[in-house]
Image (cartoon, rainbow, N blue to C red; front, side, top):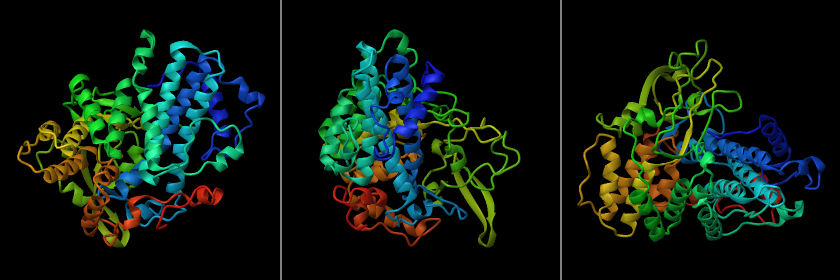
Length: 487
């Protein structure tokens, strides 16, 4: 968990950033304001500031599921959900979608917070290794935020530092996709040595914070999904061969909200307190479900936003241990009648409080991902033994190993299928399909939609290789921020 030195300063920094940071760096407090300049002076202030950076990731990962799981063959929203989730499930997303706008804003808020920290620490009393650690943590968060943006929207405005005035925010247009990826890679390379910069005392409290391994893993993922397979291979091979990481034997321990499995490389942490609690428990449990959460006695345990697709559940064989993380209930939806709803137990926090404060974390990076990415990189570069690393994940799941005689295309498909079962509801599916080629994604999803629990008539169109830029952002900067084609 993130260690916070001063509740007073953290509360103050959140108030400051709440008025200072915004979705596209607009409505900025003037940098010369006395209240603004009182902060960002000493180590305690910057501990609060980096905490705010970590905290800002929560909104990103909460919205990420719509882009990666809801629009795909992983989950659906139940019949009573009337929110913008329906647009994602039907693969018909308007430019004024609240989720599109919210995710864009969440990513840029993280970038803004990170840039403010990096800029402000230059003129502070914080020097030496601790200063470098704060900067490197902020750069990781900035890189992760841009990685999410570029995979969803393509080329986006790039802010390398805190804008000095309002005109700068309006005049910066879209950078190319390649330019954004170059920026992400440059940031992550600067984070690779963060561990050796930390003091012995700081290393005691590193769980939940950025590490060298987290930076290297995200860098490998960036290389792979941007098509730089040789660098992906070298980076991921180093982790597989030298990190000492292992898969968690017990899947329940992997998702234990009160633990931190050794398989986990980086996660967004939640607590069972107001403002810090996880939304994932309620969103993944079906509406009308009762007696799943012992402390919740008088109301539904869930809201049914992310219910597992029955067609996808049928892909799990009975001897697949990951099927133990799936459960079901029968509910009645008015005129629709009795329906069997399948839900994931990955985010099931049985200690959720009576007022729905859950502590389920969101895992961003873990070792199973490294193994499967490494297998992908081997397969993409015609390397041998890719199947061995895929089989390590299958073995943990209790499945028979795949043959070593699979063709490159067969292995590519097998990896996509294995990743779906392994990372369902972990913010992966759309990205995993799209980097294999848009034709692969389109065929996979269009073959699925007729079997979907809702909107079987949905289909992915050619222009949906990218999601739409929020219309509010385009309207703010029409000369600098053109909409993606087809929207």
